[in-house]
Amino acid sequence: MWDKLWTRVHLATLAPINTPYGAIHDGAIAVKNGKIVWLGREVDLPGPPRGLAHHVFEMKGEWITPGLIDCHTHLVFAGQRADEFARKLQGESYASILASGGGILSSVRATRSSSFEELLECSSQRIRFAMRQGVTTLEIKSGYGLDMESELKILRVAKELKENFPISIQTTCLAAHVIPSEFQHRRTEYVAWICNELLPVVKKEELAEAVDVFCENIAFSLEETKMIFQAAKDLSFELKIHAEQLSWLGGSSLAARYGALSADHLEYMRESDVLALKESGTVAVLLPGAFYFLSEIQIPPIELLRKHHIPIALATDFNPGTSPIHSLSTIMNLACVLWRFTPEEALRSVTLHAAQALGLEKECGSLEIGKNADFAFWKIESPAELAYYLHGRSCQRLVKRGEEVMSDELQKNMVAQEKDFWSRWNSSNVDEEDCRTSTSRRAHAPSWLRAKREAPRGGKLSK
Ligand SMILES: [Zn+2]
Image 1: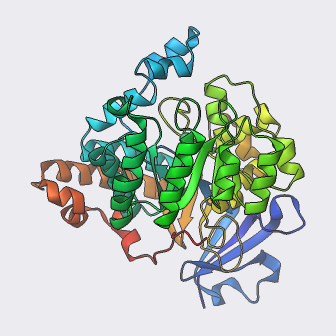
Image 2: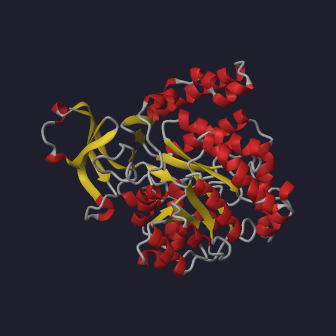
Image 3: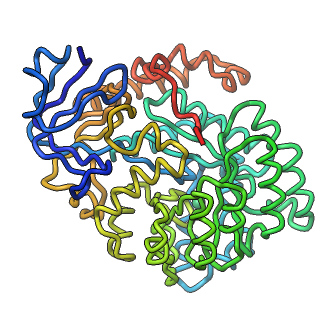
């Protein structure tokens, strides 16, 4: 007997079925123990629905897609950078703003001076927004701390989100985001600090699965990137890279040589880099939000990536400076309009290929038997609609490992419960050590926040 069965739906499976979107019209999908156990045309069900599952939900012709996956975000940060937006509009370059202490460094100042609770509260709102947009898995990078206390604070906030929200969250240490002001003339020391001091602590506390480096003229050189990758690899971290965004340094080929999960941005990538990615199975993550917001004109070599069959993922790169965009469907629209993605390519890029960019393709990213029952319901006439609205698109309901974690009805309850949670949290006497281990907080957490703790744990990088 299955746990749940949804009938009268259309499925965009993204699985290797010979139809656009891997679509199954007039379908049904069943789950048991959090996994997909059956899917296909409703007429092919092996019996009357009521006799097949404990709970049967007869829908009204909604489309179901795999839960969306945002595989590149900088979601935990404080402040905003609207003043720099105005400076950029007057012609100042990103590099010049960074050189004057702005850019990433201004977000670093704001994030350092924010408390764990302040960061947790603003990040929680962002997670809720992502869930509303159909996201069941996302990645969060650190990189606005750049000292021991602040990098760990960001990663602990991300870990807290991971433990308390009913979606999968992967964390990445991006201490190599930019050289902090206090190390401006001691960059070798900063790189050595990341390798020898920070990464071992991050590993010991299990605060991140991966390590990322911003390999660029205004950030870290190829040689510095190599040193950090070697240290990260020695500690068994997965690897990711921000590469070839503003210029070509060859970071993507380096990442491929180190077996990185993904190389991200890639506007200035060359064919030799594409071949290196193919060799290593590294996913190309393209970020049209930053391309759009920085008014870039160098388009990533999409034709070369297609020609060599490199899996292309899309992500929001959500951050306060270069991509203040937190909707994956907006990102899909940008990729279609600016880079001529097809809507189907765009949807595959935020599901199956995004799962691959996190090493999770065996667990999620498509609707297939044996994968996690992570999916989103949409009131749309065709899946192309998901890339059509520039303002983003809310899903009707969201299912994570077979449990409904978001719907119009649940949303109302969640808002009320979260309000209550924060008011109790703010009035409770919890000391700093408790904040770190957060045991007291969990006792206060509403049931939907606690629910995930009982769900089977997955989400570990498998590659
Ligand atoms: Zn980024």
